[in-house]
Amino acid sequence: MGSDKGVEWASVLELLVVVVIMVESYSFLNVILSFPGRADCPYYAKAEILADYLQVNLPNFRIYKITQHPDNWEQWLHDICEKNGWKHKCSPIVWRELLDRGGKGLLLGGFNDFLEHAQHYYGITSDLLSEEMLQVGEENLQTHIQIEKEEEERKSLINPLQVWISSASASACYHLIPLLANGEVFGITTEISIHLLDRYDCKEVLRGTVMEAQDLAYPLLRSVSMHVELDEAFLQADVIILLDDILLERDTTSFENCIRQVNELCKVYGPLIEKNAKSGVRIVVAGKTFVNLKALMIMTHAPSINPGNIIAMAMLLESAAKAMLARKLNMNSAGIKDVIVWGNITGSSYIDLSNAKVYQYDSAIWGPPSFSRPLLDLIYDSKWLRSEFVTALSSLNSREYHCVGMSPAHVIATVLRYWYQDSPPREIVSMGVLSEGQFCIPEGIVFSMPVSFQNGTWEVITETEINEKTQEIMDCLAYDLIQEKQVALGEIQKMQPYKKEVDTSFNIFSLLDNLEEEKVEKPREELETLSSGSHQSETFEGETNPNIPDVD
Image (cartoon, rainbow, N blue to C red):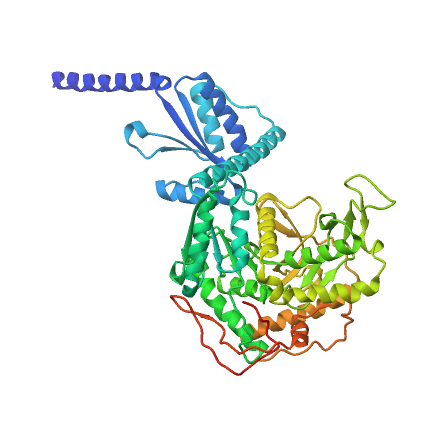
């Protein structure tokens, strides 16, 4: 019995010696702590500074910092805890890596747990004040944002930006490709791949465009490809440019039928965008007809896409107005700023000059580059504004104006450059965006209004002053857009005229009125529709409809 007890005590003593040796040698082991936290968290900031001090002064102490944006922190914390079977709900979370032992990690805890750990094992704590903690937290957030931005730029060098252009046989696309590929739009370090989408019968045109684009040998143009099958449309798209896919050839019996066809096309495009494009895809809706409605129907049929990432182009009309005014003043149109386009971009719209300014105008009054004068103070010919100016702008909707495509390409490239690299400070840009009630415009319609681009997004310039007359006209324009939406969604069958009388003689014009005056006769062709393989069309002879725009 005595010998047995002696053996047991010897075993216990050996075990105690091993434990003591392990405890005493703890400080000499490699200690690796993972240190995640919300980027702007002041407690993470305080614990981080203490951990940095330990890492500098202890040769075997290492920390692995992981910051998460405040918007992503809760989801990230939930996922990591669920993966490891931990329970933790605040920032920071600290665990010890056990990679050398094949373990998943030993949870240490949060802010207080780490401070107790440092005090117990290393005899050190932090005396950082609350105000300093908040300051460091803000600095951490800005650093995190900058690192994320640099990481995106680095990834863009590996994975080029995917740009899709629909109706790519249009002449605007031909002029647009060099502007997108020269580095001025997306940045001089961002490579792009351009995908051209169109009908099967445009295959030869697309092939020629691809070959010419390849001949350009732009360093930032990774690839150019053509697509005629809808199933592969918008695959991995970062940017989608819709170039008037709906070809309205005086082909339907009524204006309302055209609207319904617009909706049918967007019913095809919307699910394809949701299925194939990236979740943060940016969509620019351009073209000659129903630009506002197309943008709205894409939002309707692709509900997972952020509506703020879908815009309708109004800059072509804005630029044309500036050019006309510049010719009248005998100056460069670049010196005219803040002309606003309100309403339905390719329908009834209102050119507002009340906020327009003129820079670098050669007159008796001269000033530095920042000096400006109100435009209406320099144009005394009100008759010209009410007649020739309005008539010339309304002609922009005619087919003849759009044959070249240089201007549409330029404004699309300019808007994308603003979207990715910001618009000039304090400069107004007209853009069709989803209304949220700004300027008393009804919610739920795409309405052209003044915006500015900053930090990769746009913002409506709600400080813009509008007078009573402008507000009345905007009510009329909103009424038309609401009716277009209701027809497209099948809520009403026929559009009704606006009942309240509004003086629309000043800078407001209607696409339909303009077409009614042209009275161009042309055989009716069925509106081109989309199938899983290509657009298809039928021709009906002997019928005309002067109320529908004649475009290629």
